[in-house]
Length: 232
Length: 177
Picture 1: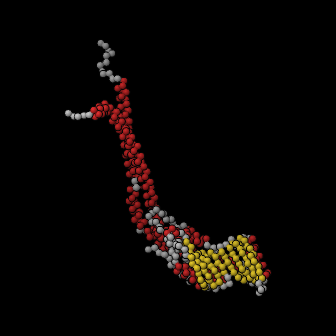
Picture 2: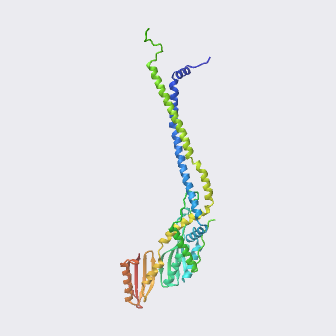
Picture 3: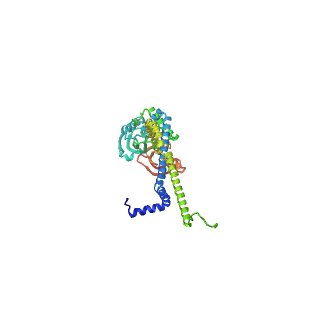
């Protein structure tokens, strides 16, 4: 004989008596629990998946667009533009290029560089990557007078690396010139598709054409263009 | 024979009330179950439809294509970022050689430029001449240009002297446009 306790017997009796109510009530309660506890989470998952898909779609579109632009770009023209940009605005302190530009320009302008003072500053700081940094040089030149100084400044404005004469003081046969040569430390370029590249604008192309023209001009008068950086 | 005798068992009013409650409970549970089934299937289908897994294959294909032009992309981005900064350098630098040219062309024969200083927009000129008349002509030219806002914003005669050799010295400060 089964040994049923009073409580169990009472429960069995209760279930037998109210089973018509209990079963649908349990179903409703379980459904409610599922609706309250599980369904909102699943709906949230749908939104998250949708957002992830949307982000992934954007990334794919960006990469596809980048690929399209790059395949339409001529390799040789890009190499030329790259060399021009690197020579005009180097990534590192290129003292050799700077002093070559100064001495060759001075020689062609018919002036002599007596002395100079250089203030290069700190360019190794990673936070400076991608920023335009000046490298200030004070020059003392003689010979050539005002005309020679003018020629020197004009030639220097077309020589690479790019420079800016901020002040000039010309005397009888000597001149003091303050020049800023510019450099821009290399900035890490993302190739993971999160950055869209844009086709060079007409304005940007015009700048490259100007640089190319200047390079031809200074080469024509015998000032060699500096050597630029390369990406291996 | 008595026609009012009902041989069917009599159900109490409470019984029908209970049946009604049970009917509604069963109906509600059925509706809940149906709703749960429909929502679960819908969520499953929507999840399958919007899942980013479908795009992974496409992503892999595009990534492999883009990887083949990575080097080119770096060069392109490099050129693009440099060109903007190169333009800003070119645009902001003063055209001092042109200024020297323009100012020199204003100096008539007989006047010597002793010193010529340009610092930003400030121009300072030291001139010497054996004739006071010529010095006056230069000063008139400069002030007239300053008044008409041609090349100069303002012109100031900073000093005038006569040295022992009989030469007149003229110091002009001007603000360039």
